Amino acid sequence: MGKNFIGLDTEKTEQLAGSLNDLLSNYQIFYMNVRGYHWNIKGDNFFELHVKFEELYDDLLLKIDEIAERVLTLGHRPAHAYSTYIEKSEVPERKDVSDGREAMENIVDSFAKLIGKQRKLLSLAGDAEDEGTVALMSDYISQQEKTVWMYRSYLGH
Image 1 (cartoon, rainbow, N blue to C red):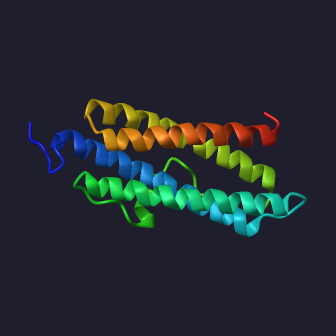
Image 2 (cartoon, rainbow, N blue to C red; image 1 turned 45 degrees about the horizontal axis):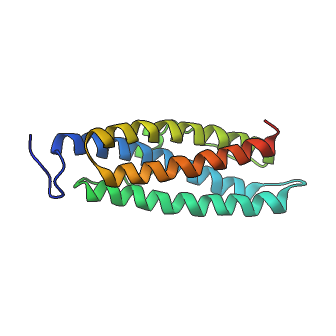
């Protein structure tokens, strides 16, 4: 059982890096979807949702960078091609969505996928004694659970 340069099991970090790259792919597609919602939103809630979507994609972009840097910290290469993102992502690509309610429903569904993946990563990272990934996933999950609650409340769920 070999250790990498930060003292973690090399086999476990390879598995973690693969899962992080899978998460990265989902984040990238989600990010582009939200950019599209921001650009294309129409209707009564335009001003409110236009701003909300910008806040969300700014946050997603920060997380994309953190995930990629975590992959590098583990000694692996982050995925960096949209063809890879589309192939790996369980978050479906959404095109030409201009209805606020549809966009919000898509966002809630996408967060559900991300949170599920992050819970699995949290477990894998705990098993690998990778406190850096544990902390990252834990922060994301707690923040996004609150965001989902707020978005669902907006939708009347």
